[in-house]
Length: 385
Image (cartoon, one colour):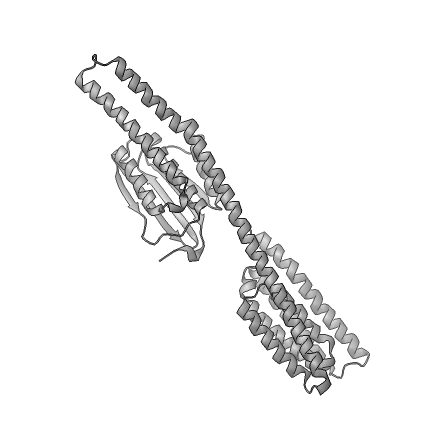
């Protein structure tokens, strides 16, 4: 991701150096042909300031390309002052250096906020007016035409870029909805062909066995068989309820979902539950809610299958910077990750977390339980207090 930022920065930075270099060469040629009255010292000073401006942008961008956009305002203000001085010293209103205003503001108008752009356009008008003084009466019409043209072109580019950003946001939302629909379809298919089918088959098989053995079982055996059928029916009902919730992830309260699911598993295992999900919860997207809910289910399902009889079950949701971390652990049998081949469940968990741009790590050792840590990036402002 950072290499992409450097590549984008380079595409912008190289033209900046070309513009500075071309301007310096143009100014030297104008001076040599006697079209400029400024001294060589003034020309050297302006050229040096132009190089300093380009070097400052390069230094900031190479340090961290993402900082470049946060440093745009001071850099642009410096460049506006420099261009204003260049126009003033090279002929005022008659100087062609005023075109540098176009080069600067047209490029910056795409990334500036609307209020900032309006302020910069006002500063440009004031600066260009000062640089053009004294301005003959018959030149004022041309002056305001230049200012209006510059402002309108910048405003047009600003609006076009904003529309492009909004379009990309809508496209990203549609892509997420498509991924969400695919995930829902996969869940329904897994339920229909996997767990749901096995539960229904098992329940029917036990009911058939119960009818065949009716009258031949003692009270304790009959009660045990009925209890197992009841447990399986409860599991089938809870699975259907969970699937229904996942089909409308907008309504999922992740905090309540995690606690409810963990309590059910802890009760089934006879383990003590340590669940810590603080009241401030992140505003997750539907796809994030769905994926994380499935990861929680899969991790707890693995504990039921492979942890033996753990005494404690830990689940924690926490924010670390711009990451949401989901921590699930038990003190069960554990295993050696180096000797165990990852099953479909763990692979599915990794795929879901990676699809969200996150990462999943697993730690375990024989006799020391298992820990699963899922980290998913979230917008910092989505953490609601």
